[in-house]
Image (tube, rainbow, N blue to C red; front, side):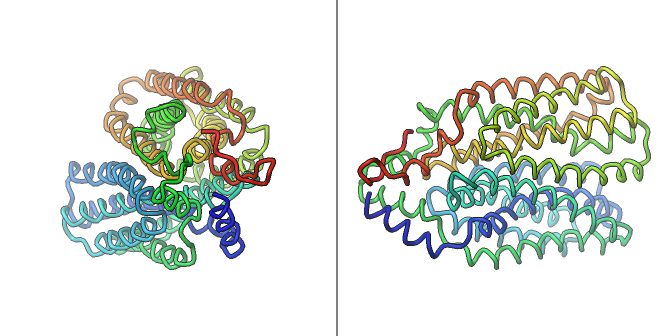
Length: 438
């Protein structure tokens, strides 16, 4: 172990900056949001230009969500078995191929294949890119750099919306540009990732496992380990927390404009303008999260955020649907989400599992959340149309249950308690590395 520790320390001097790794690998989140938003607009354009039926449009829209979920499940496991770099390089290539197919497609089936490739590549990239970020950082900046991926996710939405605002009326060419934009970004990220080496921690853990060295990160590599103490509690807590809270978030993202137009009776233009104004405000909230996530105030802000995120759904229930309540809902919900949703999930996921299980666990967590969101999303519009207040009360209940599981899993844990690598790299009283607590 001492020799392995020295190897890691020597390599660390030559490794790229953790912030550079955070930006390049965090672009997975940019591509995730950009692909979702871009496809939503591009498919509307393609429906008119290619004569797609409503059912075909629905299948294409749902296929992206389902394939992202499938990609995360398999990509996470492959990242633990074969390394982060191999997987996050292949995933970008898959996204590029899928984008090219979408640009050239002229039929439903070719579009479906292209959507599936982009979804699988995007989903598979998420867990391995986040693990790479985490394993290049340290206890003082890990949360901040992981939080940067949330900022990039928001920037991806803004970028897609900006491109759509320019090419949205260009007919099929506009849809091709939107899909092409995703492919170009993926190609640039692929080239930038050539500068990112394989995770030193994964290399060391893999070497220890092959040599039979008994450390937590070398021994814990089977999926069954996630169902055993001490990993089963955070594993279950993260799955339920992220899946249920994501139902609320996904409803706002997927059906927000639909609610504004059909329930509040706004115009699409008014809804879009108000939403666009919210984006810079959201970025401020995400930057605030980056400031507090690596401090002792993390859980305090989580509780405040959870109350705000949950309470925002009750605004519609209590005060009804109007432009005023929409603005109040958006600000309060976005503030809560910055501190008590995906950002903190990503951080907890990094801290809760050892090296050779980290991307496997995250893959399952992302898979569960996207799969549940796709299922619920298939009948959400009908529920809202039947009873708007009842639907949002139901969302509030789901979100509340999700937060109950988050508190159960993490309320009593100090910051970085499950951060096995941070412990493994620390030196004991005699200068020798100590074993991980997990």
